[in-house]
Image (cartoon, rainbow, N blue to C red):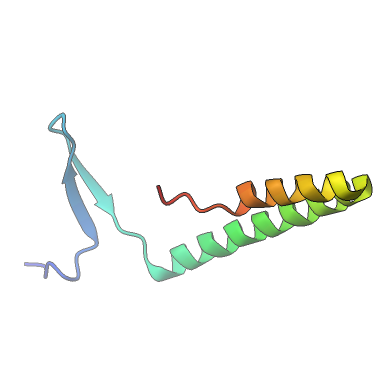
Length: 76
């Protein structure tokens, strides 16, 4: 019998009564996903900064608004 601590499969039941077998992701996969997300955000921020910096103060203000929405964490 497998130890419950080493088993990465979690069985979750939905409100409709359907049992889902979900595999938990490890540290390596999460690290790669975090790096890709950070890279995409960095490229987006640099691209917006390059375009909006040509618009003067209005562009700078717009950049900071976009920066807020690009970097906001979806924890809610």
